[in-house]
Every structure is written in structure tokens, then in C-alpha cells.
Length: 226
Image (cartoon, rainbow, N blue to C red; front, side):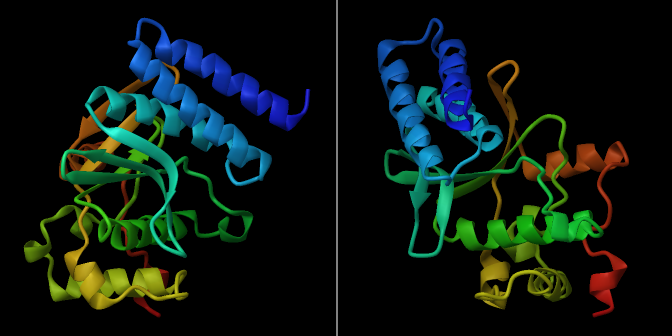
């Protein structure tokens, strides 16, 4: 079986699980999203681990009354994972699987913190609400300051986040004003095994992770000293 055949088979099996007992309208919308993902996979744009999380999250949002699109272009540079509209408001969800590129194997925490910070900063400006989606087995080490209301963010925190992002992302670099105004409103814990999604407030999420001793300082010494 080819990778493309396996991708389509896995999405079809997931759709059977997601649509069991669902209304016909929900089933139709999910099938349209599945077909879109299959098309993108044929163009080598999406991967299976990421796509199954997107579909589980899409069902959750559809059942909340949202119109949902997957791999939605925001501009000529950025494409978001899920773009949802309900009434006059919009929501963007970026899904994180925890993948670390081989070139960042010696600094996985620093790289991941920078990637998450950059995503929150860049994508939240397009969203009425911005959320990160994460599997239950992975803890997101994003900067704690970004979970605060922007008015509670200090200049020192803003400069630290700027330094962190600039270490990895400078095309284009994030601006101080973007960091000052960025905000993440929700974390979606996406459980593919059970086809369930749990919402949690970002500050509560980080507090829970810190209590378990899992989250470290998001600004490692190597970046602070640059």
C-alpha cells in the first residue's frame, strides 16, 4: 500500500469514528474536509499525524456551530490549520504535534518555544480568538507572558520574547508591537484515540504543567546571553 493510499484509508477510518451517531450535516461537512486533505496530501502539503488532529478538532468546532475550513490561507505567506467562523467572530487554531526538525535536535525546547511564540504572535493578529491544538501526551512550552492579557505584559517580557523569536525567525522578524498585542485565548487538547477535544485556559494549562514539573523556563540561557 502506498503512502497516499494509507493516508486516505486512515482518514476514512477516522471519519467513520467521528461521524458515528452524528447528524447528516456534520457528516457532510467532515467528508468535504477529508476530501480537501486528501487533495493536499497528493500535493505533499500535509501529513497524517497533523491531518487527523485537524479533523477531530474540526468536528468539535462544527458541533459548536462554526463553519470550518482547513489549511486556510490568511495572506501570501501564512496558512492556518483551522479557520472557523461563527456569527461575526472568527477563530484560528494552529495544531502542534511536537515534531522537532533534525537540525534543531540539540535545542528542542528553545526551538519549540520560539516556534510557538512566533505562531501566537503572527496568527493571533488575524483572529478574534486564537488557540493552539495539542495531543494529550505533549506539553506546549510557549512563553508564559503570551498567556497574559496584553496590558499585563512587561517590556522585559516583550524583549525576551523578541530575542527568542529572532534566534529562529527573521524572515520577516516579529515586531515589538506585534508581541505587545499578541494573545492566545484557548488550548485545545485533541485526543485522536477517543475523538475528543478538551478546552483549557492557557494560564491554567501552564500552571498545571508547571505543577507537574514539565514546563521549564521558556528563555534558556543560550538565548538570554545572545
